[in-house]
Length: 459
Image 1 (spheres, rainbow, N blue to C red):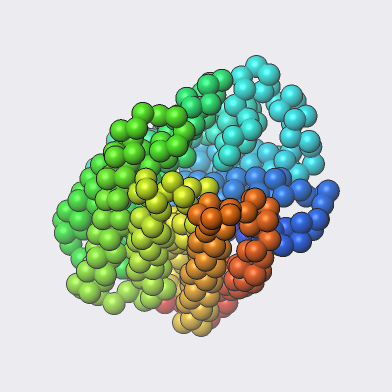
Image 2: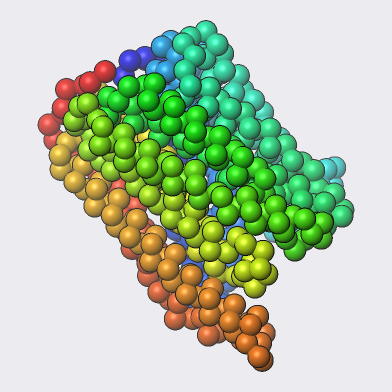
């Protein structure tokens, strides 16, 4: 570790992994509720468990992004973090606010929670992914602005690199687009139109810049390839990602009451969205093949390569499967959407956060890489989680195809619930694949507790 203040990333990483474990536990709960409808009812209804599952996903990824920025920015800027004390304070504020919000979901009726937290003053609750109480949303904005102040000041006083600039652009975009979570018009078309400005422009816009910057940083460190080469790739990838991602928002505007031209714009540009992910895959493999040194942290290299491949498959290929308007007419809101969402989030964002954690945690503990036994265990976790996610995606895809046929295409379409009954086998298989994924995650956590010989620290 080059700079002492980089150590503030460690609590963020630890909390991120802990919240990730919680997210998967609630994923297993709702997976079981698909086939055993009254499982844990009324203590944890399906809508509450799903809300906790998705909110934990957002919170732990944000925690991971913040930790990654606190580790990466000082090293790229070649200067200590502007205020390590502020970073630690923000960690506890963010973690406490997130924990209290989740407890509120679990132990307080949602309508009561809304009344208690000022939703009558400014109604922002009740929308998917943006269920957080008003005070939590305000807290997120305050934490985000203080965080951005900290890393922006660090960058301004130090070296300006392409990686830092791209990362800052992505993080500032994340904060700015979240402000649309406060806009909740009565008109349902307007509501959905701007709701996607948070949800889509996060995951298919500015988050992609964050992912690309983190991946580029790790690849520079583990391959020794010239920075100029990686930066040129980075420029190409983020340009493609922004152009296709921003206009590709139109694939969410097909059926919500917007003008018909969105069916053309959305179809064309979202069909181009796999290109930056393919470029990212080629980029990762090309850099590793051109490496100038063998870094002892083999598993970080594996996570980097896996990020490119799985992001391309999940966000690119599975996104394209149902993104054209004539296809989406039949598939929207089906389990095909869930299949795409699971693999895209895992490939693009979960894996890149695990990648930076796998690279940085050993260094923050005073070694270049974990012991060989720990790395082998972590490689097992990589393959277990990745293969399990592939099967989760395949089972949900099969369920989605059957659902579309039975419910929307057949000569005598079934009702929603009758069609769901026919998908039970796929839901069971999805659940057991989820159990395998959880085993892989526990293996990942376990790998950090395996002790052995330390490799000399490489700076």
